[in-house]
Image 1 (spheres, rainbow, N blue to C red):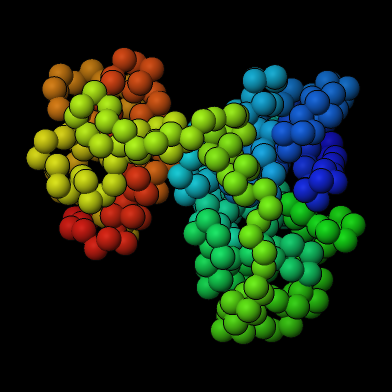
Image 2 (cartoon, rainbow, N blue to C red):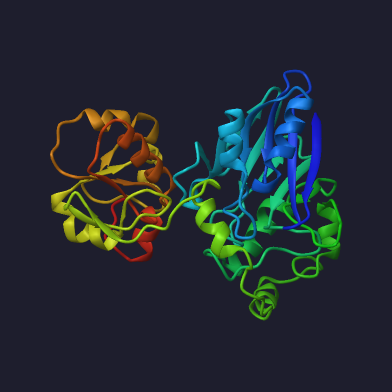
Length: 351
């Protein structure tokens, strides 16, 4: 496999380029907007074809280059379906596989730094790209973007520390010039998560960090909700006079509470896979089950009511809205936060 580890000094971000040596198909992980020209040059110099621009999470410390790489090289952008972002071409979940040539990356959900963090692991377990979930002798903060110290502890111990001891750990950042670690090293030497540290002890450490407000978050986060492209902040508005909507990542949204109030007046379409509707989060009574891959069929049904799309956390439903808009469906919105938010609000669920 062709492998390059690249670095952005301004944000101390590592970007990883991986490619199949035979087919020259490639992926890039955690790109940085300011380094897109460098990345495009390397891809072309090595004679590669970039298939995917993957992000481990919605970054708050730099603007992703994923959207720009999509425009320049025609690759697809990839994020976790839990990230709640509608701009990505591919939304992935636990155990999904990213294929490029004969090479494979397995998706492992590692929430805690943010609610939508994922790690990518080569299927031979030789390398793990851990984002901010597991850093060299540290981990990402848990006080922003749906962060949760309990969740991060469980993620690292269940998804990363169960990898072979020799698995190389490649994080999204390092501020001391270190380039890689191993599972064994972090189990022994990580002062927050190693040394047999308990979950309660880890939570206490994270609670007392007293970190400064992220310097780039007000710039980076809004743009990363659009895969790094420039946007203007949208204010709550009325669209077509039929429902109140707040735009996030350029997608009309309504809250679960709004859906409850107007359920009889709208058409609810759940775009998850069929088994998810009977899973832990259940489904809303009376919802239509139309998986995202078949969402175009929903546009063919004659129904004058506005359509509300629903998924697990808002990512797939936002993508469905974009597809439906492209098909000429105007009165459609995504339910913000999906069934995760619906359950958190203790609203009625069927299983």
